[in-house]
Amino acid sequence: MLSFLLGPFLALLPQRWRRSPPFLTSADWRVPSILSGLGEFLLAAAAMLYWYSYSVTTWVSRGLDAALAGKAGPGVNEQEIGFMAIFLFATHPFTWLIGYFAVEGSVRLVAAAFAESHLGILPLFVLDRVFLKITGQSGPSAAKEGSYTEGNLSSFVGAIREKVRVSRTASVPDELCLLKEGAEEFLEIRASRRKPDWTPPRTVKYQDTFYRLEDCSAGSEPRPYRYRLRRLSAGVMSRTVLVYSPDEEPAVSPR
Image 1 (cartoon, rainbow, N blue to C red):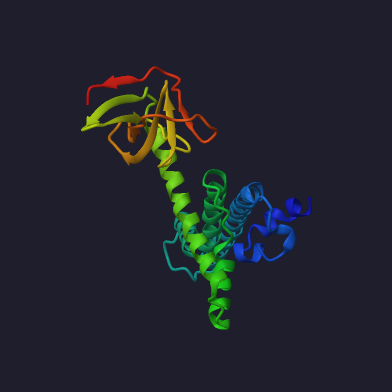
Image 2: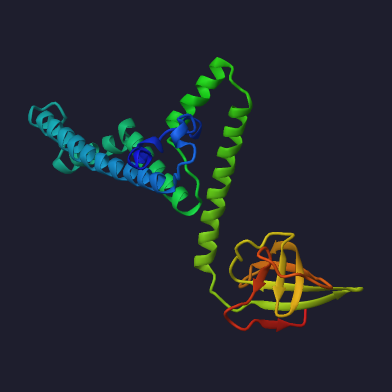
């Protein structure tokens, strides 16, 4: 319960810091990371609205006072003063800082929701890297943290690319292609959607035949996922065997 209540705040920390307390080593960070990213985005959006209202109103008021006092030069009107206030708002460093946290919060939210990548905020991560550099702590823990972060980033980018591809590709029945190379028989499955857990060298059962998943590759639309399976002479059914039973009758291709 303590980790759940403090989770959205602790999710801001680098992952190395989160592993320090013993009661957090086995915590599930998905929901706290989602809430943390969402909270960061909402706070940044609220801060942006307040900063816009305050800064533009202040600069417009100062511009009008300067115009009435004759300090702004002849021919200056309210539209020009308003445009200048908006320009100052858009180029102000504080605006960019708030915008950064809004973008970071949305990235952390999407990463936790779709890629199971529980990222902390970048400023604290950089601070942790600087601290390790200064103290000379470049042991296994630091190396592991660096590789874990790189893996999370790659997983996040891959998950977003996968979501975009699925949204743009229509769902169509699988296409099967039977191949024979010498004494070996192969089954190639071309699918419009990725098949979970289909990683070589898993065993796949289709109808009454067992296959060994040899390779997964990218193909062309509308079936960009290709799975190459080698037929086995015999097989034993177990919990690790993948059963291929498509919802729709697959199409059969001669090649």
